[in-house]
Image 1 (cartoon, protein in one colour):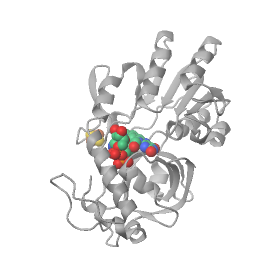
Image 2: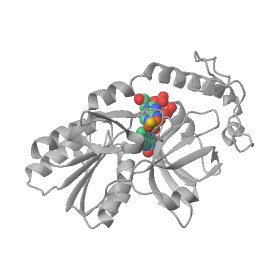
Image 3: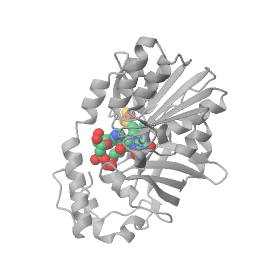
Image 4: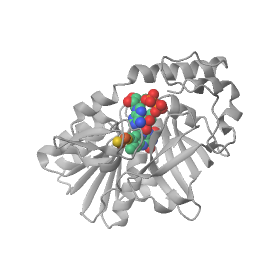
Length: 319
Ligand SMILES: Cc1cc2nc3c(=O)[nH]c(=O)nc-3n(C[C@H](O)[C@H](O)[C@H](O)COP(=O)(O)OP(=O)(O)OC[C@H]3O[C@@H](n4cnc5c(N)ncnc54)[C@H](O)[C@@H]3O)c2cc1C
Ligand code: FES
């Protein structure tokens, strides 16, 4: 069991967790992630390690509630526990002194980009950060990013904070102003990363993106996270998650991430319906649904179930 020592919302549906995981806190490097299960019948979801404190033995995760598992996780608070966390996984970011690095975070991508931006700064680079969000409420970790940046630009789609427009507009302006840029790191929704790649491609600016394919085991065994980079299959969990943006086949990534959309929607609807009515969700149409109520592998009953017992039936359905 991994105890949550701090939990607070940074934006609507976006929650920061500080969790006791001393061995991961000691070993992790920028760019790596963990795979966790909220309870022992839950699905495994990958989350980037946004920060760590080896002395306190904690790791920081920032979670956007987009589906059943992330929303379930975001309902936990300080004092609750998470069933299991595996990591650190994935290759660390390739960080060296290159000169000027533009780090671009779209929405939640800011939390994922932050540790690598910090590492680039510590390696002696000039760091120009660009953070974007739909509106002011969705701009996260601004103070943290400012503290490790030489320059910070904020853009919101609706103009409610910072510059009105997209992060691509800011990047275009930096390029048009003749800013020296040796490397761009862009992390956010797939359309954003794809757009950034198209901005930098004609200028020959090296660009790195962190991909978010569906993952299962996180160790290169299942093939779930297969992406095409430079025309060749790569497994994002062991060969990435960071790749050369100009080599990534974003079309295939988008198609693969949408493969289970109907099931994901149905799963979320069952979860929300059960949460609202307090009654167990109807049995899902999956063959391998676990039949017992969820109990954590440690032997104790899941802390989450203790807090919200009426949701135990939801987990009988798994995913
Ligand atoms: C290396 C890596 C690091 C990530 N880091 C973070 C992070 O720091 N914070 C964060 O909030 N999210 C992060 N994600 C995405 C996060 O794993 C998914 O949002 C989560 O798995 C969705 O699960 P769900 O049950 O809540 O939603 P679902 O109902 O399963 O899916 C909702 C949406 O999320 C996408 N998705 C589903 N499963 C996965 C999966 N295993 N991996 C990626 N996308 C998926 C689907 O395409 C769908 O659009 C990361 C993904 C990867 C691959
Ligand atoms: S998650 Fe299974 S191979 Fe990458």
